[in-house]
Length: 294
Image 1: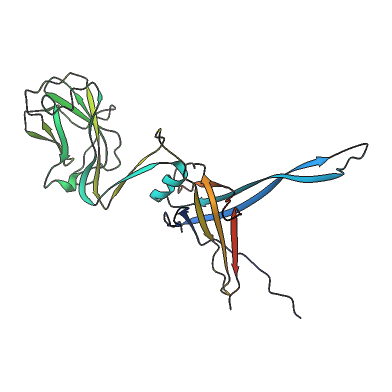
Image 2: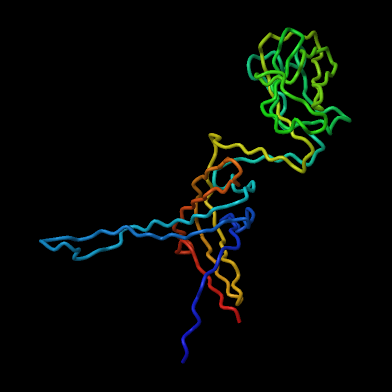
């Protein structure tokens, strides 16, 4: 009888985290750099007398981890591995994705005596520039506007900073009762409150803007109610040229966070670490299925 063909694993195809309660997937990760299942035991050695080698050794506990490098960051990755909550804004031709909010003081955002809303100006969507906008009261009725990045300043009509404080308005904008005033060349307008305008100088408010998009995800990390959900993972090696398949089904696991690298001219490739836990129902931590092609 001839020897059986060797089992050989090549590459990685996908990782799919799933919910343990109903096996429904969170989503699939396919832009990945690799994954490793590591099962390492801690041993208790018995020494005695003058012998320099152990007389006996017994495995105590086994550390079980699955590590993977991922090259794309879908929303569910933040939910599963960082306990984050994700809110998604639907497709829009430019939108204020986080409404005007008071930062210093309470006078800038006011439905009556300050600015009631910050919105995209109809017909000026092509000038909308992504960023975080800060509105600062220059007097009781005027404001200056600052943007915290110039990443989209060449979209539509170009704008530039007026000074090192990142101000984009050459002169203060006057806020008038129930009237909209445009932040020049940004496609954004500020509408005054319904009463007599009376802001406090140096008070500030901010809002966030996105240009034409097919959805914006707002990912909130570190909430007091955040949890790292126990989940399963279906991990697949690449399909071999002979048709062989190799699958690792991690039955119960918990993620442990990941770094987000922002380096010069380099793609961000976070390293994920998953701790495998004992599943008492399945009486296992993982199951491997190796399929030999016919």
